[in-house]
Length: 489
Ligand code: IFM
Image (cartoon, rainbow, N blue to C red; front, side, top):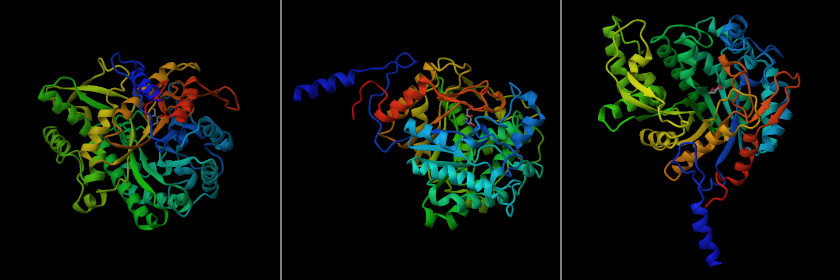
């Protein structure tokens, strides 16, 4: 018995699975039994049924219908995976995978078609109630996002994220959702990836609603979004928390930036990059206000560019107090890591840009598959934000082929998970969510980009789903909780 144990310790500990980056060895410690493994989707990307049962028009309906040339294959989400009509099938698929949780989003336009209260669409409420019930009946925890990029077009016409009224609109919508679904939801997300909403939607204009206003638009958009998040958080806190005991936060998207060299200049530059990316959102919802380095640099450059005030809006003291401590867990979408290095101060040119405000050189050189910074990211978050509970709400790999033999996806996901496992004795990581359960509408890439562990046949009216090799691999991982052939406890 003793010999067997000794053999197991030596042998199992010596088992190594090489990752894509040559000298990294995959972690062979088992994930705890209560670690949550899940998959994610979002409403516009999978539901289809864009105008059914009273749904209103969202900015993505409008954008794809009026600007199809900006979508790589000129497609849209009108039908997409048709998940609106496939609750039973999709939940059966999740059940078969064995996931502990499912992250999906609610389409604001299904609940309040024009964005204002007083106009609640019962069919929309019923749809999500049915989905949530089906998940609960199958022991799958719903993790629900209120906003995954699909603003009612009606609200966009009133200014969208540029409007001071955003927080009023959003808090009302959130209240309707908390009221309707709160009893069954433990994990809420207000906004998914604010930086993508604002940089692409209101800065460089590449995504809906397509507003080009770089170096100004993103900052105003994020400013209003933070206030809207805080407003919804306080609605939950005051009216629902005692009854339902859920947790509310917003989802950050971030790639860890590691200093390219050990020089103090590169270290400072890499830190600044993370603060401009993650700190921009995370500092206000934890501490009340933007990072000092952002306030100082944007004010300095705005002045040199001839602006009367900083392009970065200011929070009042009252707003700072409302923003502070509005995150019950830290939700992270991360797909990559890169290296950062110091560069000269960029010239003062118009239009301004967030890149020039940040002033950090970045390179993917020698970055391997980009998983190398995942553990470091969690340690960075732990140090800055007082060791919060964390959930990886998205991670995965994009490919551009129809193949079911997606070994590259397995490799990248395994590497990332291993990096997370490496630091799990030091941080409070509660779960991991793979993007995505199935191929779906990937925004301006249309259906040309694949993230699914299930293939969807978009030429088949039935939208048949077929398990990929990564799906089988993920299923096995959830069962064994082990990234290697054998694991130590
Ligand atoms: O598909 C997107 C998702 O909507 C938000 N996070 C990144 C994913 C992959 O690009």
